[in-house]
Length: 446
Ligand code: NDP
Image (spheres, rainbow, N blue to C red):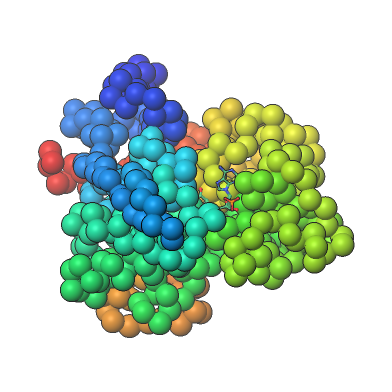
């Protein structure tokens, strides 16, 4: 029954969403995990809960025309895929990257449903973005693009409807421009976006939350092996928001981070990466990771990013983008002594890589659990906006830790309950699905 269920669902998903391979990959993984749950709960099959979940509640695709500094007109494509409001308003980031198309947004939005359910906060799932590339654009051009993007998006979102945030290519600067335009168009000052600046509605810890949350989650994975971060070598791919704060927290806990990357190449520093230098290059100067070696003689730069997984480490934290570790990368990590992998990025490991990790006894923290700290803290930002109050750094950080602990517990318990002890992929999918499925059953066929 289970196998037949997966193939039947996937046949429809592939036929309805042709060419959207990342979405197929994400849907298949969840279908394979929850097939046993559906077997045990025939009411979910009868009400076609999973079949409804793979079909977004709403998909919006729109034109984004804008002018660059020379007055030349450009046309990009904007997306917002509103997947599920079973447990709260749509919530999920916006990605600005040239690789963005409907399949990427759908995979991210679908993952978001289950991730958000795990956070213990009341938020549904959605995702959006554009094929716009902020790299190499002036602040003025980025502002014009964000204003044009929001000029259409504003009519589809709202603090109780859909609350976007950042993702690849959308950080504090972009959220500011998007928020400003929303405010102007609607004449309202509300918590319609998260990741806002601290002086105008943002939450402390939101900037650090995904990276810190990842480390809190992996801490639990290491503890289950009677290990701590002390003395461990760590490799972190990417050098953006998630990567930087994962590095910072791992180092605070005693790890040595030996490599980081961007989309051009990676740096190795056997003395341990100096995260302040990376922050300066990436957050202030918006430069390239190769500039790091100018400041640190102990470091070397290697062109091309795949090789980063050949750098020996005990913990790997892929924090750049989807499908960045394939089977070969996974085998190399295992051969070099890797004992734990925590996914900072969304779906950074291919299904073949995940199989290698699970078969080799590597502790594996899947994205929808391990990187849920970002969206969880966004939900805490929404909460503070509604109360018109701000919590201290310590208070938000303590709540983030509690949430990451709860996610870990939910995943391990669900894995145990379905005979998959230690498999946090199955555990995360099952625990997230059960919460959403129960809400859908309660709310009828909508
Ligand atoms: P940023 O834009 O801040 O940083 C992305 C980093 O990944 C950059 O170093 C970038 O390099 C690199 N990168 C992006 N695309 C590619 C690619 N195709 N190949 C190689 N490297 C690439 O994004 P975030 O740190 O916010 O996001 C990173 C990942 O984490 C994404 O998968 C995102 O969905 C996920 N995530 C983010 C959350 C958040 O709160 N920000 C929350 C949960 C998940 P370059 O500068 O060269 O482009």
